[in-house]
Length: 118
Image 1 (tube, rainbow, N blue to C red):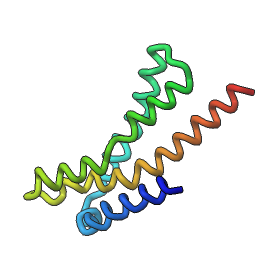
Image 2: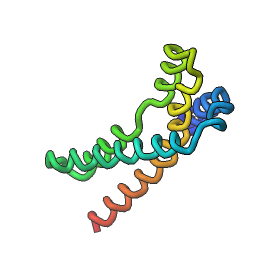
Image 3: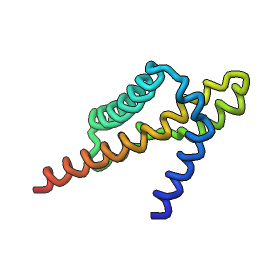
Image 4: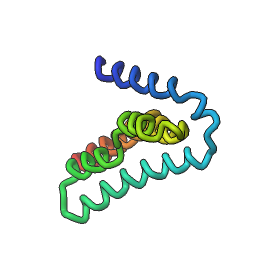
């Protein structure tokens, strides 16, 4: 419960700090963020399957590759590209999106594991 609340708090800070930029952002950035995440999940799972990893390892690698550190991306963009306030927007959007997609991926992997163990 503590970790869930902590993550929600961090995401809330990131989104609140970048809310004007997020609202001004075009749909193409949102699509790029979603595709980046889905591609990371798929490549993590697919490449680990090609190496012969067991299913639980494939799931763990997929989630690790797909869930990048968006808080770090946002703070680095704000620090090193301060002249370009929109540079932090993809990281802020990813902070929100990857929590949804990660939960969905975890459920898919759990169901897949349950079906395999039946």
